[in-house]
Amino acid sequence: MSVWSKVKLSQHFHQLSDGFYRSIQPMPLENPHWVHWNSDFADSLNLPEQPNSEILNAFSGIELPPEFNPIAMKYAGHQFGQYNPELGDGRGLLLAEIESKDNQTYDIHVKGAGLTPFSRQGDGRAVLRSSIREYLCSEALFHLGIPTSRALGLINSNTLVYREKTETGAICIRLAHSHIRFGHFEHFFYTGQHEKLQELIEYTINHYFPECQQHAKPYVAFLKSVVLSTAQLIAKWNAFGFAHGVLNTDNMSILGQTFDFGPFGFLDSYNPNFICNHSDYQGRYSFSNQPNIGLWNLTALAHALSPFIERDDLDVTLGLYEDEVNQEYSRLMRDKTGLLRKQPQDSELFGELFRLMAKNKVDYTRFFRQLSMLDKQDEQTIIDLFIDRESAQQWLNDYQQRLTLEHTCADERCEAMRKVNPKYILRNHLAQIAIDKAEDGDYSEVNTLFNLLQNPYDEQPKYDHYSNLPPSWAEELEISCSS
Image 1 (cartoon, rainbow, N blue to C red):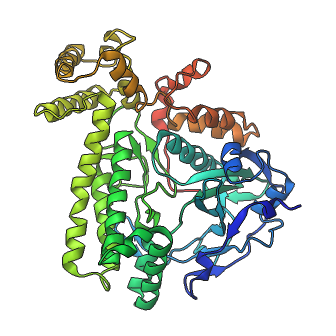
Image 2: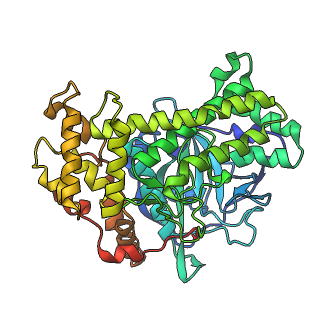
Image 3: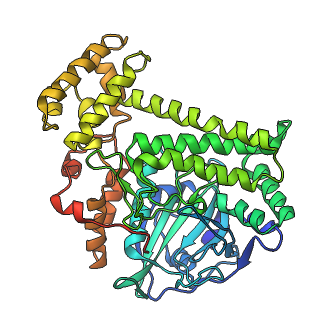
């Protein structure tokens, strides 16, 4: 019996009219083989915990089951602030939708499947290094509790791909509750296809925001949901020290999930102006600018919806963003520091902390993890993270004084803080080590990092060295959009 006869597959997006996508067959990879398979996630989808040749052949384009109907979606978007109408799935295909054991529905999408009508000057392929980065990071974010697409499997091959060097073509099997982007709506708005734009809005509300149908103004309620979920997502990124790197509107999920991983990066030493994409010459997508870009992108979406939403409603709805992102960020930072009751002096306390961290180039993740260990370790372990130990000691004194206004004991407070301050993150140098080994045919480090990052908040003694500060060569790593 076929594997696919045992799972619940559907084709909802395919029901939209002409112009939303193009049917296209994937280009098979040469000698495809598994780099990794997400066994737990697969099991939740009623797929085998160990993939067989039928699954490998299906996802690598060699032999598609009849239950799959691959399509390339058409969309547009603003890239680095400039509108580009020539976008769409240029190397990825939506195969079907699958229902999990807990009745959630995911798009099955393969990234690196070959040429499509929207490939522009590209070859439709993804290379192993970028596929490893997306595979590991999407799962890392998921286990941190940050909304994100997920990775089901990773395939490498003997297919040669030419970038800065000759590399091998890979496929990342990506699952998301939806692959609809802000750019989908922009495409139909800017081409004047308002009937199709309305069709897309209705489809999106019916499938993903059914609660909005009960509102007097369903379209306004839909936009409000997107504004709030986007604000919450970006607040989480900044609280965890994550920079996406390419926040173009075609990379923004309508569901407020992290989407389209490229030159992302977690902060090592705290730098509010951190730019993880070396192609971002003006710092448009710098770490500290992410909240502003979130609003910019939402404004672009609102403009695309303007034929069906009145200007006053658009303005009021967009006006909810700043308050939401600030409140969510404040809540998260209070959780990270154990300061659950707002006090007038808190802004000054946080401001001084970030000033000291930036000046002393303190590692962002390590600092907050060490702060959560005050019930087990001497505060000197925190002070030693700073060059200016005197100022660090003064801040800690102020922090300890502030804690007297809380109604929790140290053990209880620190235990709660350890549940929101990870010990392990996917640092760029760790990903690079895994990539270097994988390019030599050794996938063991991919597997190790995958297992490690499933429990980022736990003490894992055998992996303790993965929480060390990055080596000096990590500063020389340059990550771009190239894939």
